[in-house]
Image (cartoon, rainbow, N blue to C red; front, side, top):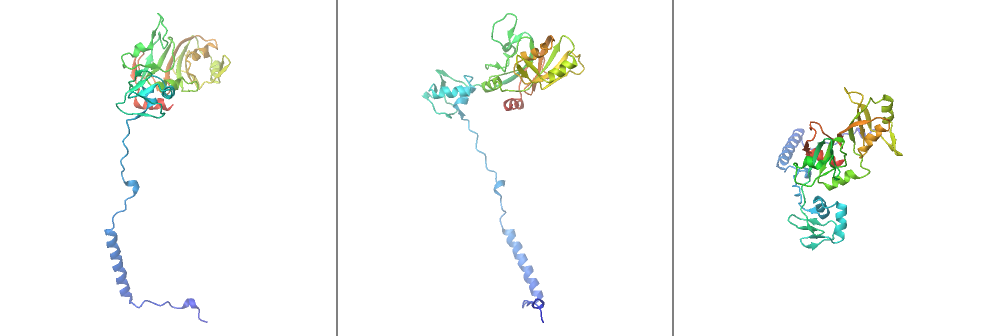
Amino acid sequence: MNNSNNKKRPTSGKPSSDRKKTTSTSKLAMAKRSQNKKPIVKKESINVPKPIKSDEIRLNKYISNSGACSRRDADIYIQSGNVKVNGIPVTEMGYKVKPGDVVNFDGATLMPEKKEYFVLNKPKNFTTSNEEDGDHRNVLELIKGATNSKMQPIGRMDKNTTGLLVFTNDTDIIRKFSLPNQKSPKIYQVSLDKNLKFEDLEKIASGVTLDGHRLFIDEISYIDNEPKTEIGIKLRTPNVKVVRAIFENFKYNVLKVDRVAFAGLTKKNLPRGNWRPLTEQEIINLKNI
């Protein structure tokens, strides 16, 4: 019985040599057509110009930048009709101020300031308090040559505490670091009247209870190549007075507290009583904390 699979398939009527010629001719024709084709341009490779950043600014931010109040408080003034733009009351939330617009806030014309940031290595006998006292002066005296803008320190520091203190006219940043839940790290060098016992160091490292509140310590250690009266401590509380209270709770007298780092900033290479402007990267880091 013949198997159908063994049947020979019919061949083309053209000789094999002709078939080869036809194949090679078609390949040449395809090659020519491919050369004439325009290159395919992917959409991703087209350089589309980015829109120009607008100089417009939201009205509440404009008010905040002027130092009049925070953005949140500015919204209240706007809603109550106490803000005018070019003489016309504006109550619209999200309204944007254009270059050249005149903004009147609660009866006064605003002039937004450029935001500035400085770090000071504070010496003793200067305080952040505005209270008059013949024994100490205000820290603002130390940076009066830095700028004509109205600056404020971030946080408080008493006259006996030295070290890193940040100043700015950015009310949003000042408000941010004044919030109770703001837990940026601070590092202090503390000088004691006697050597800190190792067992006391371990007790402090495990946490301290002050006035019924539990305080957690990020790090505490003896300072290398220094007497055991010199202690480094890292914690997140904004209250500098707590640093003294920690050691006084263990019956040590605190001779000196020096803040060496605040929110990622340091006073490295900054002599006592001197200031410097923050770098662009430092400002970005401060805002992102």
